[in-house]
Length: 80
Image 1 (tube, rainbow, N blue to C red):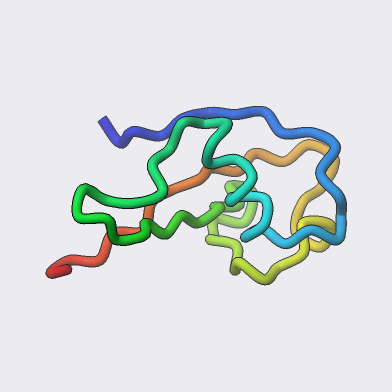
Image 2: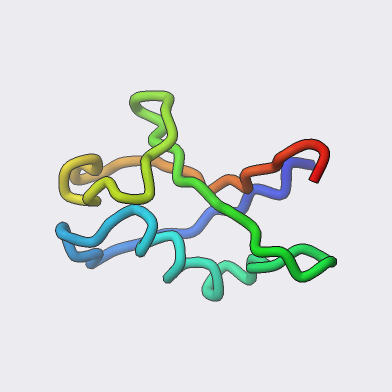
């Protein structure tokens, strides 16, 4: 119902940002980059272990441990 998809990621450079990681995963996960009106969609990575969203500028190496479960979610702004 939520449209969440699971995707295994490995060999991510530790100096990559979570924003770069998400952008690289969009096409692999067949997620749309624009809405039906052509406006860009915004996705966030959620770090399950800490129950928070990662900022796009956070380095993967600072946030992710050896085995970490995270999810990618669409940011929805009401009234747009």
